Length: 362
Image (cartoon, rainbow, N blue to C red; front, side, top):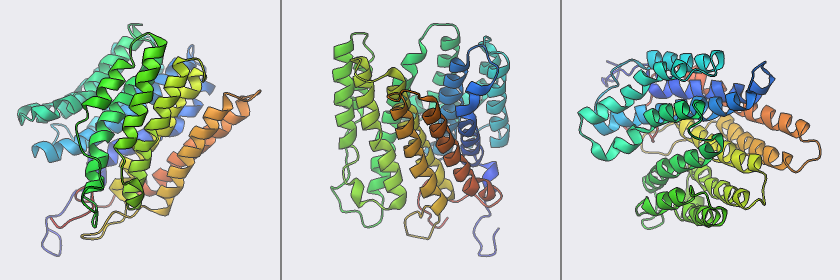
């Protein structure tokens, strides 16, 4: 027990948000520089480290944190062990790039630890999101075995962001103190998800139309964005970034935007900012009954991510893109190192409650 009589809380490093968001940031920091390694296929290694390494760690951290609130159950394995397994999977992917099972085997216990409590609690409505980590494992195996093209992954990740953010962002905005009723978007997610699914058709024009409509739908989910406090504004802006990312994919389908530019709008502007906006909430300032307060370094990191995405997209139009790509990589890695400057010192402190929401008395 703590001196005030409330239950003592474990250190953040024992919590999935502490472990997996730190791992995601570390992998993100290394991501732009995979191209410098002596690999047979650095592009594939870059894609795998970005989507399944960085993205997979962030998804696991979020869902492991959320499932405790959904089910009242802890994961069957400790967070530090699950994080070690996830890191081992990334090392195996670099060491044996053609082996499908080498990275998959360590990730099975991670995915199972997400899924098992939800199944045992019979929270079937949460099952699709709880199944996301195992879906990422299967998708990586399919990619290695050439069953799916790498170009399909950004749209799949955009659909995941659309689903997770489409539920979480309005909920966080609606729960903000002083929020005027009716200024936050409500309604089902199925229209956006159906549009994302329709965008997967091979025909260019129908796919582009579906993507453009999905981009417009995203904007309806961040209604009241400018009334949000700083923490929720970061989250809403990250979700809003999905709109230009989807529009970029639409232009890419029509040949009006280079594929690399469209893909990086998704992975850097949308996925990167969304992960940071969620992860930063675990270490933001808290007062009972008040909103979360981002650290100045959180704000710097968030701005640097958007700058990195813009520079990387513009690099495709440059006559010599190499310097601009290097600058984008430096901004991206600098953003995640800045995030870690807040996150790592906080690992030794008690995990806040709730981890991703404004604090309240236990």
